[in-house]
Length: 312
Length: 312
Image 1: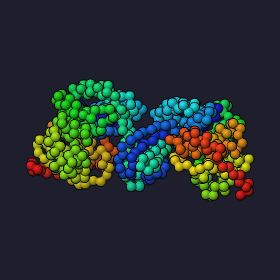
Image 2: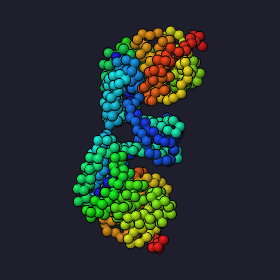
Image 3: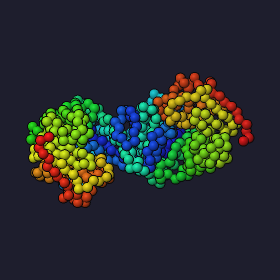
Image 4: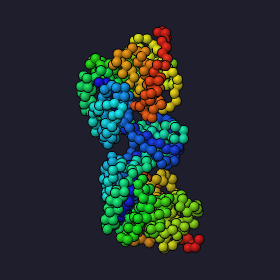
């Protein structure tokens, strides 16, 4: 079983309005609710790829109940097991307002519930138990208030002690603290990389992140594809063509591809090719956690993989 | 007991963000949730004025549960009784995004749950029962999907048959259909008046609305105060000074003032003076359904009331 951790899970709400105008009152044409948070998107993609997956993290209150109910309905894409730890606070919402005239999305992220020290301790126990049966673990997204900023360091160390490969996908101080615990893979985007290294040159920034402790760094560069610094070499990976669409969830599909390739024992170039194709096929899907399977299978053989010189 | 009807009640969510930028992702600084919908605001103001009030309409799903829980907490302002009819759909949310830099508010209104014919029938039974003990009734706001467009006509007729004075506060076709059933009072704003009469001249528009069936028309003209066409005469009413602030809920306070004055047997000029002062004191409060009591009592004696010529 592949485990994904989403400490700050969310109930994702999407509103479609004819046109978003600041200061105006809008009639929402269509409301959609989905289980949200990076680790849940990763789990849904993994499920669709045929992998048994389990999600954990914190949920609570009416929004948490709704999230779990929606999660239990996600069956056609493959089963996703629910191992969330219940907390007293209410799970956060995210509201995405889609302007139908332009297609643009405006996002409002609630901060998330306050996690009590005892709730964090209970999570650590549950996480330790779940690691026994995990073939890989992904640690995804921001930390809710109350969780120690070094949380991902603790979770990476626990996974490594248990011999479970661990991928970290977060940003800022939580990423820096997690890197120090030497995760197997980190997957920052170029913005997140610049945030922790102070440089916007992707290869240089990825190299710096790797020196801080990651065994492999896979940087997602948007339409430019991926840059992978791995124990097998350094690779630039690009989908056969650039696809416009909704980039939300593209990074989560990269994580799912890397994890699935890892547990299947694929060489790194094949993992990266899968990640590039799956990410591009997600951009063309309706929502995060979904991808266009036909497009994915069409793109995969055409992904360009270029080995880079080892020295920078 | 004063009864307020809110067929399309809402869970009002307010987000404060440093600055609202379309197409950006925002971290919400503060989340507030309140029971929402015009009739609920009216009831809370009535409660604060010392009147026993009961709210009815439809609620359902997790948002409805949350609304009722929040309503039960509204005690310091006076008791508001809950006589909502439960439905299968989920109560709508409204999301108001306050830009802290400018103070501007952007509002997103969900459409509301689909009401089944049997649910509407059940509501009519409950409403008929509640009218037995009502001294006045206010019918407030938009209609949720599934409720007949002539709903307010039906509810006005039932109130009149039961001998209960009825005030109608809605817009568009539901207002036109309600007017035909001859409510005691309607309280449109100038925009709503123009929408049903085709003229933007307030006195002319109010006169047209009165001819369509209302015994009295009280038009709220924003900072310009109120225009009242009543059986006792036609009045222009202005607060002693113009107050800037949040206009949300000002109209609901007008409704509460008119109802309270009605059941207390006040002459029309006194009801209108109360409405103008209470509305102005609401503009300076944090949220709809609240008002600044000290300011209200200070403004009330200074309200200017000018009798207009009867003929137009």
